[in-house]
Image 1 (cartoon, rainbow over the protein chains, first blue to last red):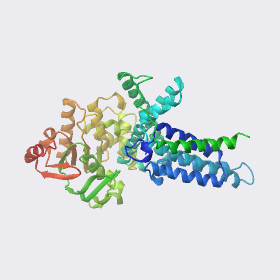
Image 2 (image 1 turned 60 degrees about the vertical axis):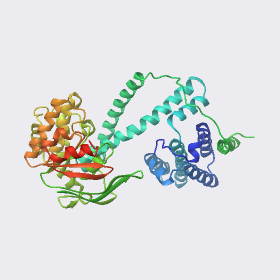
Image 3 (image 1 turned 180 degrees about the vertical axis):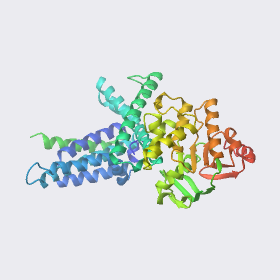
Length: 239
Length: 230
């Protein structure tokens, strides 16, 4: 789910810079607007963006399952107190809403990742953020999204290898330890090989990037991004 | 007996196995051939429940695989295409012991199984060697030992000759021959039928998730070449 999939959806036809702007606007709005109405609007927007990228909301939530574990634990930890009354419902509820807003941001990012080629994301970042910081960020994003699926496949292979010889019979902590240790060792191994491959193929900090161009389709996306950013600024900056 | 009854399996809207039926008898040596993407690995992974069919049933010795995964996984030993993918421990001995430990056996029995499995693949006295110090051929043999230590009735191997040089291929081949002679059923996927044809009782050719050849090895080579699946 966290990889680009070729398609011809509305999101696929947008310029990656528009998608970047919408993501930034959405994340800013999700962090500043905390009321129930705003959350409803943001939820509808997130579902709309997933639909525009041809992603089922359920599959997107499943893709975010590892983050969901942490997001679900956060309200519980926030609600706990070290003395009476032991559980503060209000604190838990506030954190639960914050967790939900973070989940919405993740869903919007899933739609963007699903509909944007890694090279285009890198080009969008490098053209939006000038100079060395843009290069670094672009390369970082490109490497992350190329590396992440490989690492996930490695973890799945380790799990299969364990399952094939009844590893599932072991305690969960022992399984998690083995997977973490092997996963880490293979991640370093992969990183070494990736570094070698990059050098072998003349890795450049400033390669020729794919051409990007806005079209009419980008107008509503850019308007949405602007609206979201303006709503954030109006909320945070006292007039 | 391993039995596939009308098994269909797919992922991401792509059908990989299509209404596939197949029976592998006890002690039989079956070679599975077919081009990349024909469904060989997917078929093998159903044998010990690493994959579950979308429809249809896989039975091992008469029991549905999903109904008793422990029985299926101890009866069907699995050797992955790349031995490195299969290792879960740092040393040879620890890795081969992984399966027997999961069966809850006592330590003397585990030690005896590890010794026997390593002897069977000509790797005796190498228990303390670190996996990464082994050659490709040695890794392949340790991977087979890992499966053998479970004392399986069937051994399922996914392209075990990939990346091996000629002596290593010969070594793996001779291990398989002696296992087969001792009555272990073998289901082996390969791209090179010539390598293993004389050991096989039967050759199965796959294409697009379906079995298109199921015949004795004498006829299989010509038919596979004719159908361009080799």
